[in-house]
Length: 347
Ligand code: TXA
Ligand code: MG
Image 1 (cartoon, rainbow, N blue to C red):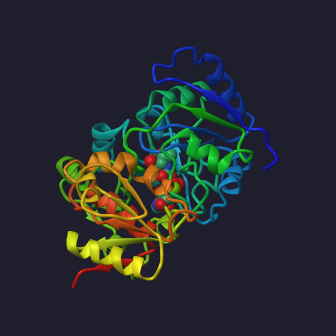
Image 2 (tube, rainbow, N blue to C red; image 1 turned 120 degrees about the vertical axis):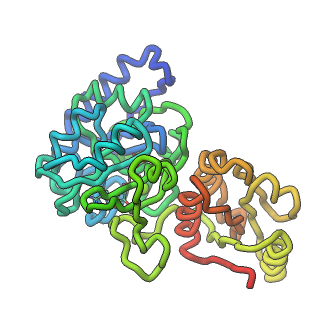
């Protein structure tokens, strides 16, 4: 606490946004931190060329300093300013998916502040596909380091009110541009090796990546819990709701059994599941998060739904496991982390 947080509401057509943009850009140029919407989740931005500015991100979020930040730029032509080279695979990915929910990891040329890359010799770069984010980048005329604008460990923010809840009084400003589009973070892909490696599944699916560059590897740690993840951020607890979450792998009868087991212990049960499943169960608090038939819809509502369960209302949240096709892979990656790997499986 302590800071007065400025708050501006902007619509996606940027109507009457000039004044707010100028104020936000001015704060960024004074090495302050400002939260802004992107097409994935809200980001907490700071001048990526200033260690002083970037240190305020780590402070506001309570983020471990060994976890590097993604650098956001407004245009493809800016990427080369911060990297030693852009290999052919990266060029293809940039052409195909940017602006959009993809982050490419490249060799840093050292111009980006050291605390952005957490001492690594690589840097993650992306071009957000959101009019407010792009306009802010252009007005500030800076590359912006920006992690998700939540307190470390909590679900990422998809609405300005989530940012306010976590960071009011800790940041200089919040640009409210409404609900974000994709609802999950960008896919992070390391392009420094010959065959690119997905370090974090996200808005761009593995299938989409394969269509553009053919061979794509997936960080083994995403599949096998015992491996050390290559993206430093992937090893920390993440996305944790207020109450503990268990991920339920099994059919509807198995799900009902798990509800009953928790109820028998005298505990209050929350259920987070597809609208198809929630119709079939009874619990103390039930929140649908989209349709099993439309995983993109589940992605949009995932973090908001996680945030809606409070430990004052439920002792445990039982959550449906979703298919891992398409964006389902990113959804399940986030839910497994939200569950701290507490996965209840039908045998
Ligand atoms: O969609 C997004 O990517 C959002 C919006 C705001 O752009 N940002 C975001 O940032 O999700 P953050 O800080 O919450 O997650 C960044 C992830 C972390 O897992 C981090 O470890 C990884 O990217 N990362 C960043 N730079 C890296 C690097 N040089 N090498 C490996 N992993 C890196
Ligand atoms: Mg994050």
